[in-house]
Image (tube, rainbow, N blue to C red; front, side, top):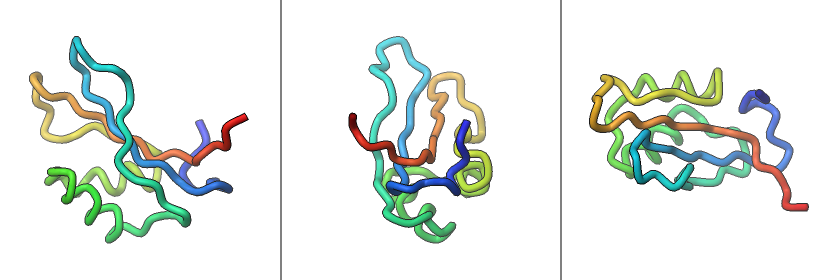
Length: 86
């Protein structure tokens, strides 16, 4: 998997919830440049997130699960390079 540092076309922040009726990943934000930890935290907070450990996971590995783990709401976040449509 390509890490977030290689985004020629910008970066997309998405999330998905491991639930029965889930329809895939959901869009949160687009970044033209690599987001800073402060920018990511601001966007995550605006979306109701309160787990700062996600920032490190997103910036260094491109994804992470919401902590603490809650069996009724297992949410995963992803920061990926944007890809142009063919």
